[in-house]
Length: 114
Image (cartoon, rainbow, N blue to C red; front, side, top):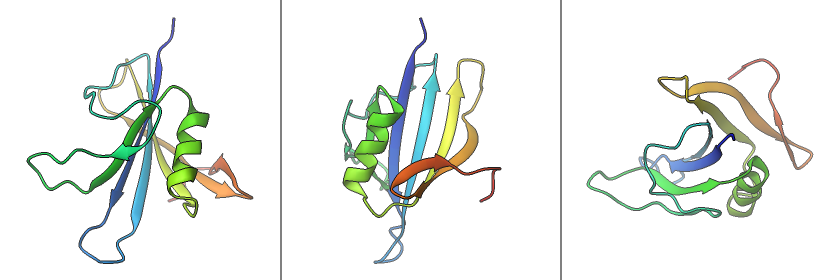
């Protein structure tokens, strides 16, 4: 039986008032995330810890589709999502092709152009 969790993390550059938002999506494949802070099935404001984190919102989702729906609801004007895979065989998450919004649909960017 395989296990998948899609974790969304949304950060903001707090050094500027109009700081840009960065959206990252990590697919945990046959691996349980090390931390269990995010809510399941929805994006919620990230808990503030000892450090003044730039992390704004976070959530874990059972499917990629659910994660993308939550991102679109919270940030309808988002155009790019940085993506990672983290498998049981990996020591660290590996960056994969980002998702780009085209015609209101998310698609992987061909080649890893940044």
